[in-house]
Image 1: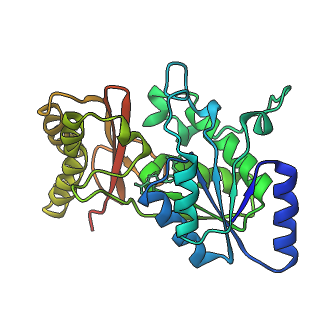
Image 2: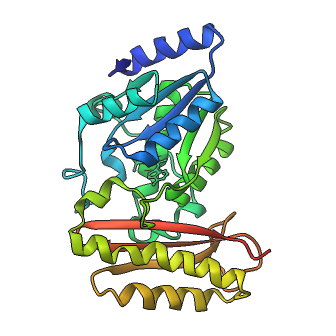
Length: 282
Ligand code: AMP
C-alpha cells in the first residue's frame, strides 16, 4: 500500500489515477482507527476504484486545553487495519506540510456550525472545514465518506461543499456501535471501566427517545428531560448539551414535526463523547 507524506506527491498520484479514468474516494480520519473508520473505507470502495485514507490529527480543530497533544496514535496498527480492508493509499502529511509558515487562510461555514458542538467548541468547525477543504484540494477525490457519528460535521461539510461548488460527492456512513450500544470512538480509550459502563447511558437514552417518538411523543423538551435524567443518574458524566434539532438547519426544535436529530455531548474526565440519533415522526 502506498503511503504519501507530501501534497505534491499526492497531487501526482491523484492526477495519474484520474488520467487512467479511476474514481477516487477519500476517507478522512485522525487515525487510531476502529471498526467505524473501516466501515467508511468499505463504503468508499463501493463508490470508487481507489480508496485513499488520510490520517492527520488536525491541530487547528482542537481548542485551547483540548486533547491535541494526548490524542491517541498508533501508526503500525492503523496501517495494518487499512491494509486489511484493501484501501489503496494513506495520505499522512506532517503538520508543517499542511500548515507551513505563513499559512493564514480559514474556511468557515456560518450558521450551521454555531449550535451543538459549536457552542462549547467555537473554533472547532473552522478547523474542520479548513482541513477538509485542504484534503479535497490535495487528494482531488470524486467522493468523500464521513460518518454520521459526527452528524454536525457531516452537515457542515455538505454545506461547505455545496456553497463552494466543490466537485466532491459527500457520502454519509452509518454509526458503528459497540455491542452494548456505545458509539465507537478513538476517544473511548480515555474512559475508565466505571466511566465506560456509565457511558452506555448516552446511546440508551437516544434509543429510548426514538422509542418514545415511535410511541407518539412529539415534545422535544420531554425527550431531552428523559435523557438528562437518564445520564445524570449515572453520576459520572457531565452533560455539555442534549438537543433536538431540525436535520436540515441544525436549529433547535421544540416540537418534532419533520425529520429531526437528537444529539448530545457528555464529558467523562477528559473524554468528551458525542452521539446522536435521527428521529422520524412519520
Ligand atoms: P475521526 O478519526 O474521529 O476524526 O473520524 C474520522 C471519520 O470517521 C469521521 O467521518 C467520523 O464521523 C467517522 N467515525 C468516527 N467514529 C465512527 C463510528 N463509530 N461510526 C461511523 N463513523 C465514525
